[in-house]
Length: 309
Length: 301
Image (cartoon, rainbow over all chains, first blue to last red; front, side, top):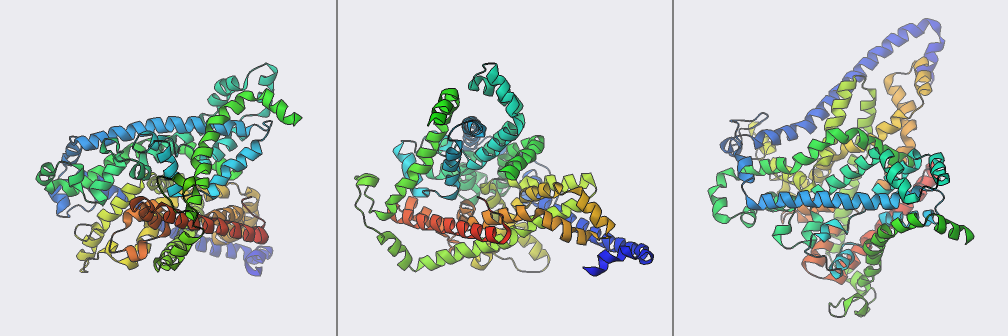
């Protein structure tokens, strides 16, 4: 500990020391910038590669000619995808699940998070323990499956909308937000004016809570759009399948025949590699498109939750 | 009780809107916990969960005596520990490095780009891994060929499975995970930095003596949460990455539960295996939390 910190106390050596130090700092910074640039490339390269492959010609893709930029630009992959009935159904289903699921989840989350943020609510800590305990322990896959089955939800759209509707972490984040951004004075003033709790939520809390609502919408929408496991275990009819499940059968199981007409598939065999890349882009783009617009809110909201959770 | 009645009378509307979410937790979280008694029963579809006969710990004994038990426990623990070792410290380093960057634009660019993969779905992520590592056309193998090396069937090698899982996970989540640390770093009192500057500390010394102690509470809490999730691996991703060639290192407790329970309809046995997993998880969480409380007075409850 002695050397660096005592250096400044000796007036003569301090100047020389500082120059030496800043040379060291410059090397240090060079290392940091190099490392971050490498990380940037490592994250970006696969993304660009996929995008480039998806708009290259089928031959360039199936002969491995794409390295960074597209080769012989062609949109054949996309035109094929968007003329395949099963993909279109999957896309429509995913849009429906995302819209309906997000609406249900956000509503339910606010319905539990807001009351729990009110200090004057009797029993709120008991309810909070009741809710957070489910983060630590659960019945498991099979017991949950049996409940959904008993409720007659198996192979219906409800199975993807209801059993996973509330995420405890989102409840904690929303509750912390309400607690820190709705001043008690405002609540008291509204009570004096005879404003009911529901009216207060509707005309004061919701307008003041746009950032957290944006976060909830984004998180639930992304989760719902990306989900496949609930669909895998609960759904049997392929007209209900979300896009992710169709994606799995085409790319991961390499089971194009199950997903498309066999004859059509053989005819398009030379397209199959290209199709995989296009499919990845098509399945990811909606989520990546909304991300830059809500990123700011998102980081803020996540911090509120994690700092005060 | 008076307080309660007063609160009910005053906030009946709030209690009213609490009913649907609470019903959700009872039906989809607590009722399954009760259903987990299945683990101690011999499930019979016609008799239902509660009507089926009790068999005590027979399902558990069946599981522990099965030779696959140790493989499952070993695979689950090895992947988790590897994951913890790589996935926990690197986001911290990323945050510390980003915190040093003074070019606002570069900093924002790195943050935005590293954050983005978090939004990629598991299915897409696994699809990407499969395309990139494909023996014939995957660009990793094409690159190896270009360097004069032979192609490797990455997903067919049991020894590579853990690395593929852990490093692809890091690629996907490092940016997201670093956000919390960046926030903690932003919250450090600027006076401390000035004091360090006055004392002539180099940037590295500043990181060691100011930044690290500043984010230690956040690090501890996240470490506890991470350890508590050791048995709760990214099951969906592992399941999708599995193939008959790599199961010797990729079969974990969760994938086994799925296969036994839902594919083989062996409900009672799978429930017992799942329950074993949850209990270990809970015990680990409590242990690590207690340890952290004693060492650093940080704890999640």
